[in-house]
Length: 283
Image 1 (tube, rainbow, N blue to C red):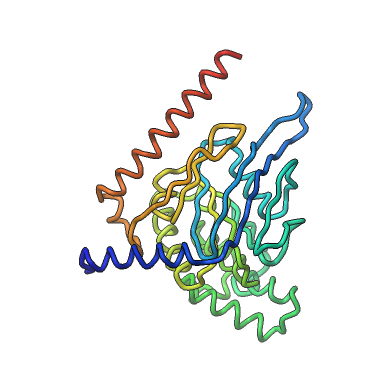
Image 2: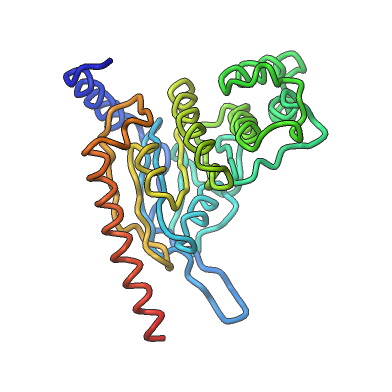
């Protein structure tokens, strides 16, 4: 068991590494507007933030706050109405192999085995069958599915399918992994296990992660920073650094520090929800 001094040293070294890393993602004054039959809807309003290489950042907010839209803009699926998005200092003009995406549903190829699902990306990128297979096998081992390498998606549990989806997204060695509520469809026990598994995998690969969630506990447990978003139109209300030691385990949620972060988030989100409710009442 780590001593308090070791925990403090661990926390300090993580903070130092984060602050010294180069900027990986730069979202600069981004507004996103959609045309609807009832007129234009502002999904995100002048959103700005930067994420350093290797950071784990959660976008946290209620449904409809624009967090998935912001994530899709980083992915290149949406184009900003105003502002700009850069990844590794290059403007985002569309999807690219430097950004892997994981959705709430795994969306695996049902006719392909676990190994074939994961090796598909490298094969399409020009890797030989042997190279693609080796990449797949490494990732299968990382996500703990070696026994199921030849299994098909319909034979796997929801959590196992999502592990395959994460491995598939990492197969092209993206600099950034974008995750849109990937554990939202799982039961509470599986979700908790997947959160710990994701952190263990992230510790191995070091990929920059942007993770969308509406679950406060999930955001605090996973992230280096939590970007709290307002009810629509989405704005960044607060950039909250989670100064908790790593590696993290389920016991962390019982700590006073964790409880303090949770109260901070709850108070802010509650105030924002009441404000949005009052605005709707006036309309």
